[in-house]
Length: 109
Length: 115
Image (cartoon, rainbow over all chains, first blue to last red; front, top):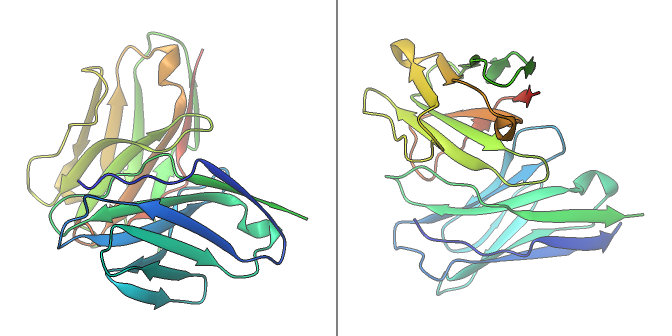
């Protein structure tokens, strides 16, 4: 399993764009990069997944450089409701994803 | 369709007692995971079931913990002789095939308090 490293916490004001970077230096060729979001008192939920370049959905964007040794989750114009823990995971098709401690994002009014 | 359900939502028990936590995965999902999350901490992987394969028990913290999955569907996590450090939220998740890029769908969790 590729190990991931991400900041423990981040603070942001409402309306700002938030970028959370995750390092995964040992990512394997077959690994995908997946991000989950967890609100207090709830289980995590899937946000976005990518393999290379850029992926965008209605919630976030995921930027992956050519070497794939890192990835950046971008949340546009955050609101108070985006306060949550964000997990970065990498995995291939043969092993289950394992969650780390994630990044605790606090959005301030 | 229905999501992952877990029961009970809350469980308070006395030290030394056994507890059973139940998980009903999404119908058709062949993979099932159990995690533990202590207050303010990340998710700790416990055990993983995939189809008829032998479960991956590598995350179980001690032999007091065990889990089974009957008929490839419902799963029960059993903690014997509970200790205060077992207090946590126990989360169950299921995915379609259990591969690394399959989305995991989580249940609401069971909050276990050991007095």
